[in-house]
Length: 269
Image 1 (tube, rainbow, N blue to C red):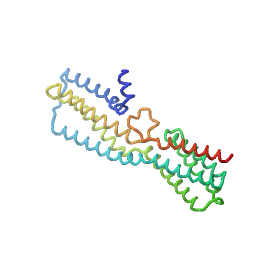
Image 2 (cartoon, one colour):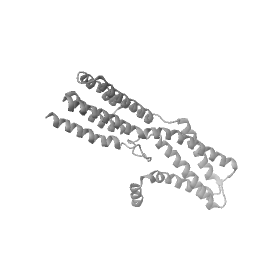
Image 3 (cartoon, rainbow, N blue to C red):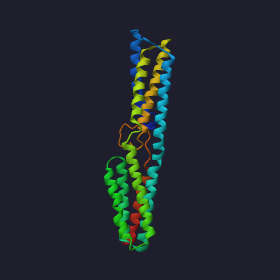
Image 4 (cartoon, helix red, strand yellow):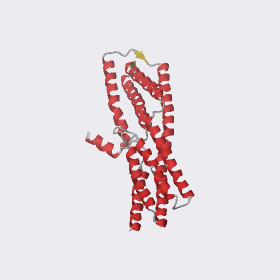
């Protein structure tokens, strides 16, 4: 057991496989019991293999659907960090050139917003709170009007709008499931196939054990894989076994914005 835990710690990619193994073990035990009592009343036919192929096709269809959202989601934390850092740069420039108190306050708000955004990804903050903090930038933009050109504020508004769009996009991705009826039919067919494999007579017996274990493992593994992949922002799930989208851009940005704020504080002294 210690070896397994050590292996999972060193290589998290095997976590999902180890989660599926107990299900496969139960299926093999059931197969052994059914064989022992000679209760195998089904025979392997081309119709059964066709159902297996159809289920694999459905699984492939679901994977292709969730991968689109996953690939799009990979860009979101980096794009958010770029928008926030652009706004921070503009505020730092304004504070440096005009010694603007509003720019200093906006930098502090950007740091607080970045921290709240990270908490929001872990579902420690509500979406409504994040949207309110995005709208709160408007107060600083009003203060900037007498101090700078209109193009400066337009650039900030564009970055604000992009952040708001990405927040809505993340909220939609993690709160909705891709084609729930598709999941249902795949789960139903997989359950029927596994039950069928248990009652199918395949000679020699050791070959039947291999095929039952292999097919069951693949089908159950793919169902769990798709469900976890469907939410690339599942940081708040303790049993999330698929790699989530990295938040490193936002985590690194926190230190850079903090440095900008420290520099602004030193200049204001």
